[in-house]
Length: 155
Image 1 (cartoon, rainbow, N blue to C red):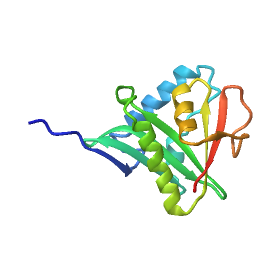
Image 2 (cartoon, rainbow, N blue to C red):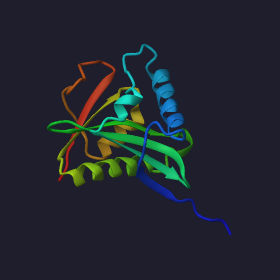
Image 3 (spheres, helix red, strand yellow):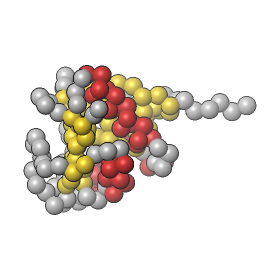
């Protein structure tokens, strides 16, 4: 009899040997979407800072998706959301976003912001369905025709 796969979300080290290939795939994906380089990936060292919580979604121990929460003074920013292409369309992105929001809620933070690119239509749809609304650029983000900033206030 076949055993059902087990999906688990956990706080992880973005530099661990089984997670770095996932981040490298994300970087390659973004480089294909934005070949002019106007959307820059977050360096690995920034993901290891004390104000960052990095989550992976693992199926039977194998990382298939990732995302990070970066705490700032008055908001938390979601960064580095990625789902392996073979796992897309299964609702994993929605579950990962909810897991990240739960991390934020447990900390007592209320405002979540993110920046995504205009070429990432699936991501934009995910965020809009989850209640994120467009907002002006924030933090280190500046007005960019290939970039969209969004935010959500948690209840």
